[in-house]
Amino acid sequence: MLDVVKDLLILMISSSLVSNVVLSQFLGLCPFLGVSRKVDTALGMGGAVISAVPLCHGIGALRGLEMVEVEGATGELDTNFEGKLEAAWTKLRQYDFVCLHLEAPDECTHNGDLPGKVQAIEWLDSRLTAPLLERLESAGLDHRVLLLSDHKTLTATRGHDGSPVPFLLYDSRRDAGRGGVYDEEAGESGPLVENGSVLLDMLFDQSRSFSFFFSRSAKDGACSQRKRV
Image 1 (cartoon, rainbow, N blue to C red):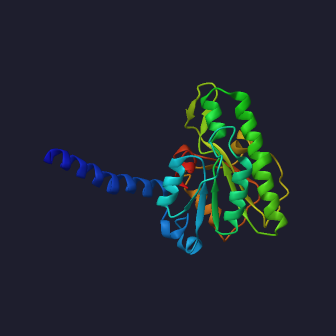
Image 2: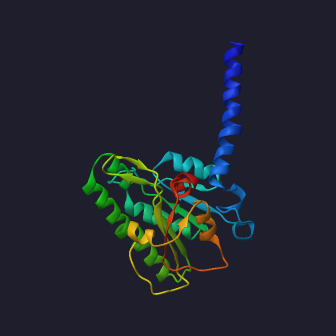
Image 3: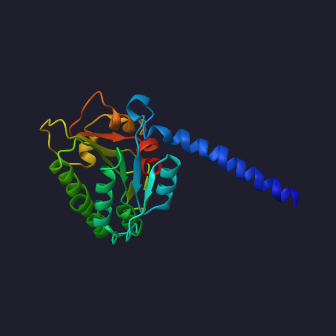
């Protein structure tokens, strides 16, 4: 009996000290500093995580972010897109930062559903990203958007891939007139960001502005972006 208790204590200590330290180092975040390692730009920030994935909510809570559960958010293609949009709009007027996560493209790929994957990406654009940006612009609110996949999921293998993913960083305060599209080819034309956690510093850097900044982020960063915020 004592051996069992000892094993449980070791497990509890390991979970609270080791696992959380790994998360802290991996995420590179402090729950009292919002979502960036830079004190001057993150102090006083608050934020929320909108996702159908419990893991995202749990890690977000560890970082001091509010967990937002949307009715009808399933993590599949039938998820409540409009509900997520309304939740994001509400929390953006309450907090400095919102992480809006969509699981559907990943799940469709795991299921070998290519048409569903394409549909999920199209709806991400037409039912989430575009209407949210339109609301921000109509309200005259300055904003910065970081758009990326947390990892690649290949239809050929139905599994994850560790190669770099493209990302887009947009700042409403600057119009460089670049236009373009958000895809792998556009990402390949930009510099490689070796450590994905740097993207958060770029997102909250007040000393510079961006406009349709396309690039790539290495797997040890962006591959776990969903898990980190």
